[in-house]
Image 1 (cartoon, rainbow, N blue to C red):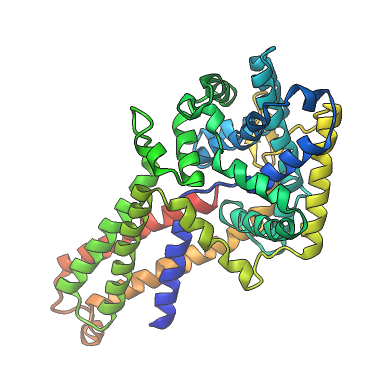
Image 2: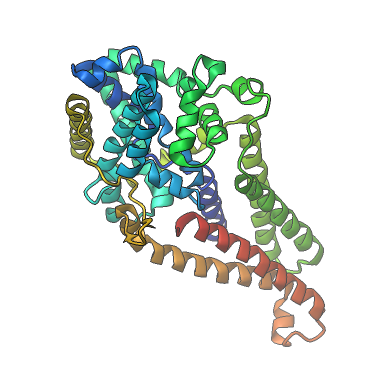
Length: 422
């Protein structure tokens, strides 16, 4: 019984982690630190042009990940585009001669350059996905969060002034995109043009989750920011499935196994409520941020000290080199597989590194499917009835409960595949 409860809790945790897959190669603070340090250290035509626009450069960097909420849908092409040379060329074209917009694009290019040292074949996220047989759509976040925490600790001691600057920019993240916060709508328009979809709502969600300004979420805009429908469906589905399991097991359960099924139903029910509450209160990302710090504490997906130092060093060097020379030589830093406009298939390094985990996940799903079917069957059929080959059983009831089991598992399997196998 304890093993089954643990398994259920494990699956529930995985589902929570699929809610906000903000899979930037580096977390926002690392991106900000690289960018601000580069702007401070390098004297060049680029840095001179962007003096006074430092916040815009920083927001250009952060804003390059706004399409991340579309990671599991057709809109993922917007995320991929903003991480390619083609997308950055589009940004330059749309910016024209406007200095502010040009500086925004410089920030976006820095983001791509910085991402490359994580998403490429030799990047740190790719490396750890391979080593720990991890999957991009979950374990990616664990790796990058561990990198950010380790860097925060290092720089808090070695360069407190730089850390203070990063802290400051944390409080004004994406402000330049919104006139209500002292920014200019031209930057939001640029984001939409480069991404080729309207990302204003995504920008509000991102900023609210990151800065934690609920008043911005609720009152600054005439049209209230909304959570994408696909995310809202998840907690509602979990709640209804959990409630149905609990009710039916109380009514029709015959054996002690029904209590395990009831516990499963209660976990799903309460999980659905908890997730919905985080949506309403705007704390979803904060909850996830805590959860993804747990595995490295036990040594799983924890970066070595040597890797933390090495990747930090080469990424800062790449940042400074671009600010010094203006040479942008990255073709694709998304790390994802896709089909180019000319029909050529592109295999991403992150996708390739995740292949090993798909077999593990597939086996896990099959075992889970069989385990829950067995649990439900044993809950409604006594040993005596099993020995008598179902004599005297209400066949309609059995068919109904097994149908419920299949429906529940179908939803669960779909969510798991949707979350882990792109």
